[in-house]
Image (cartoon, rainbow, N blue to C red; front, side, top):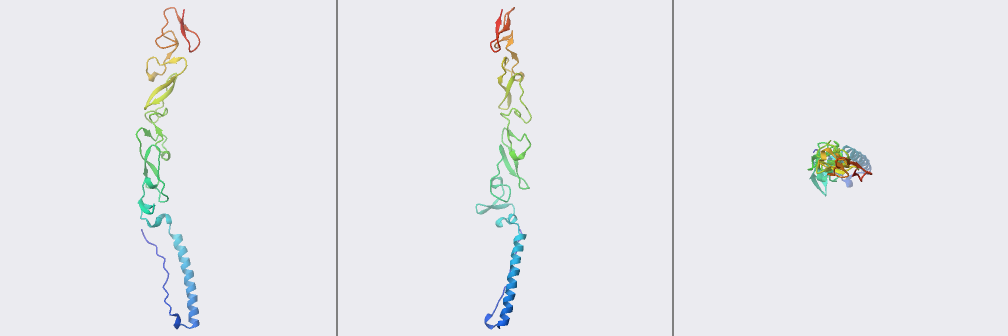
Length: 206
């Protein structure tokens, strides 16, 4: 890193041997020199970017806790500030441009919305829209779906239906108003009977 030096000229004076006129000229010269120094200080202040110098820390580091530290997600990815970089469900990484980005998603999490700013936001173990993988939406017939450990399952059957074959892939396939599943699984009406009655209380009737 280059250094910017702002220096004033040295003045060596022997006041005792100077005449009043000579002393006055020197004082005027000093006032002019001081004015020039003030201009130089302002110019240096404008030329130097405090964010670049960052209290004298070398490139790739910044001042945190009174010492120069490497720029990592633990202290933030920009040279300004020392707030840690956090991304939900992810291990963060500092990009070449100083942005906090996803380094890797944690197990069972993914960046399904392709937005790095909110991390790996999706828990694939329980998301009905991204069950087991991004884009896999749980849809089960005649039922409210559920994503259980990354596998589409049945949360609850709709009224009047049941999962009589214990296969979530075809949902709650059985109608509890049919003669073979009258009011419940494994309840079959005999020949000549019909399944009737109010919804939720179907029974075999002669």
